[in-house]
Image 1: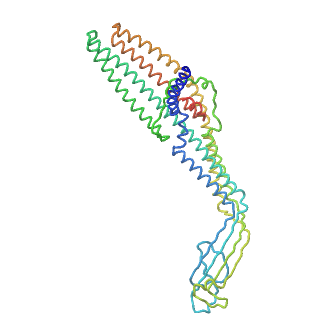
Image 2: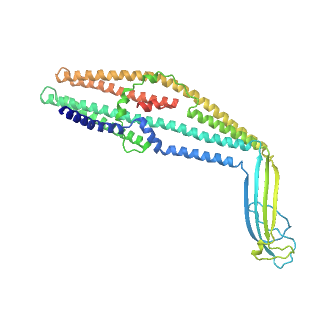
Image 3: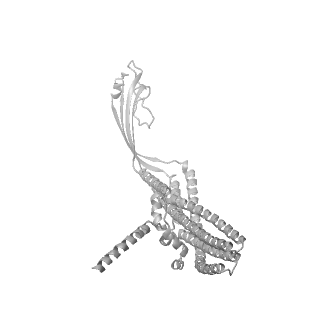
Length: 462
C-alpha cells in the first residue's frame, strides 16, 4: 500500500514538472512556426491577392465582350419638328425631333417620345476576341506567378531576419560571457592587490577591461532589440521565444543536406513569372495583329416613337400628346466592319509586343543561367562553411578548457595578468569566429533555399 501511494505521488510530481515544460515548448517559436503567422498577417500578401483578383475580373470582362451587346435608350423631347419624315435609330445622345413636314396646326413646337433597343453580336473576327481572352488568362497566370515569387522572396526575408535575431542574441550571450570572465578577473585581481600580491595597476587594468566589456554588451542589447522589432513587424506579435532555435543556430548539423546535388527547377516562380509574361506579350501581339482584320456582326433592333403631330398634319404642343400617334420599327441585318487605316498601325503595335515577348524570353534565359551559377557557387561555399563551423566548434571547446587552466595558474600566481588577458582575448576571438561562422552558414542556406524554391529544410531545422 505504501509503495502504491509513493508511486502515485511520484507520477503526479512528474506531471506537475513536465506540464510547464511542455507548455513552454508549445510557446517556443521556430522558423517553421513563424511562417504561417506571416502569411496570415503580412499586408504585402494581401496586395498580391488583390492584383490576382483584378486580373481575374479583367479576364471575365474580356470574355463578356464575346457575348451579344445590348443597348437601350428612352427619351422625351419638347421642341421644333422641322425636318423630313422617316424612322431612324439614333445613337446615345442623339435626340429625336423629326416629324411630318406639313404644319396645319397653330403650334410651332411638338412633344416627342422615343425608345429603342439594339442588339449587336460580333460573330466572326478572325480570332481577335479569342486571342484577347487568352492574353487576359495569361495575365492572370502571370499575377499568380508574381505572388509565388513574392512569397518566395518573403520567405527569405523572414529567414534572414530570424537568423539576424539569433545572431545578435548569440553575440549578446558572447559579450555577457566575456563580461562575466572579466568580472571574475577583476574581483580576483582586486583581492590579490589588496593582499599585496599584485600591483595596483593590475586592478585598474582589470577594471578597465571589465568596463569596456560592459559597453560592448550594451551595444549588442540594442542590436538584439532592433532585430526583434524587425522580425515582429512581419507577423504582428508582441514577443518571440526563440530558445528552441538558439541551440540549433550554433550546431549547424546538416550533412545530409550538403550531399544533395541541386539544380534550378524550370518551374521556379521567378522563371515561371517571366514565362507567363512572355506568353502575355505574345498573345497580345497576336490579338493586336488580328485587330486589323474585318469583323462580321449580326444586328437587330426595335424602336418605338410617339409624336404630337397627328396623321392629318395638325400639331399639338401638349406634353401628353407626345405619346400619341405611335409607330413601331424593327431592324435586322448583317454588317461587315473593317478599319482599313489601322492595318499599318496594328501591325506595328503587334510587332512591338512580339519584341517584348522576345525580350522576356531572353531575360528568362539570363536569369536561369545566373541562378544556376549562383546555386553551384553557393553549394561550394556551403560545404566549406560547414567545415569551418565544425572546426570553430572544436576550437571553442579547446579554448575554454585552456582558459580554465590558465585562470587557475593566475590564481596561483604562476602567470601575470597581461598573459591571462591575452589568453582570454584568444578565447573571445575563437567564440566570436564561431558565431560569425554560424551566421554565414545559415545565411547561405537561406540563399540556397531561395534559389531552389525549397525552404523545407530551413523551416524544419532552425
